[in-house]
Image 1 (tube, rainbow, N blue to C red):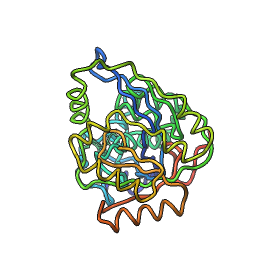
Image 2: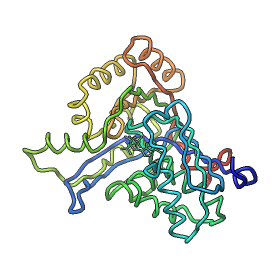
Image 3: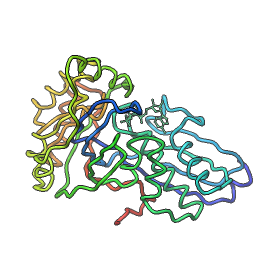
Image 4: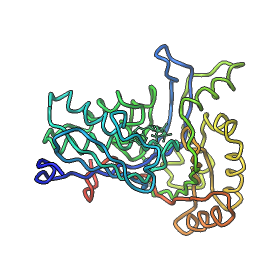
Length: 311
Ligand code: ATP
């Protein structure tokens, strides 16, 4: 332990995973990204990121999901901390510890959550008092999902997903996430999307007014019937067992099911707390999945631990 680490206080921020309630994929833009229109919801499955002043920059990844996460300069939390430092001309290295609970390469934006958490944590540590908008702007350079995870809640994402506008919702939604043992690479899923769409024209992406009405009504059955993901056929093409898993979840009482983002995690919407427990038990007891996580949404964006944001 260095002298700086012994004496300096730490800041811990937790950031949520996300599910895309609707994910519409448009044509490839001149910058190589697909245009998107999506409805994000943050859910109560969290990574925790702790930062403290140190003599050198470092990142350590701990917790049940640490395997496969780079503990070097390519880690998104490290890149986020350095980006914030660069914007403010700060030369104060930090030690970053990530407690990882969000499935890696699961389509739940765990890396982006860590980046959002690192931005909020370092902003606090360095006393910068940046607005959420300022942090989201820096986050957008790191990944399309980072701005949403700075804000949390439920929001529409446009552009490549980084232009975020909040959405009015009522109630709490109960989710069961069926995680896969091996992740799917987001670029591979987009490549498969392009291959499957090669014989047709891809329309400009728009989100559906019906989904917005369902969110305003607070009725999980209405929302369950409106879940849609343009990447789902591509994810199923790469992992056919995801199609069977979706069928299984619906037969066990889910109101709706969807591949989360680029997958392979599958998100099931349950009618309430008890139904979510029953669904998680049915999915694991039947052997359909080895891990099913319950979570609720919408959840707060990256927040100091124990201090939910209210803005
Ligand atoms: P998305 O839904 O945003 O497409 P994902 O949930 O499928 O992302 P992530 O868990 O964010 O995928 O990770 C994708 C890759 O990013 C990982 O395989 C890993 O190599 C890299 N990575 C870099 N930093 C992190 C981090 N802090 N946590 C997880 N993965 C990271």
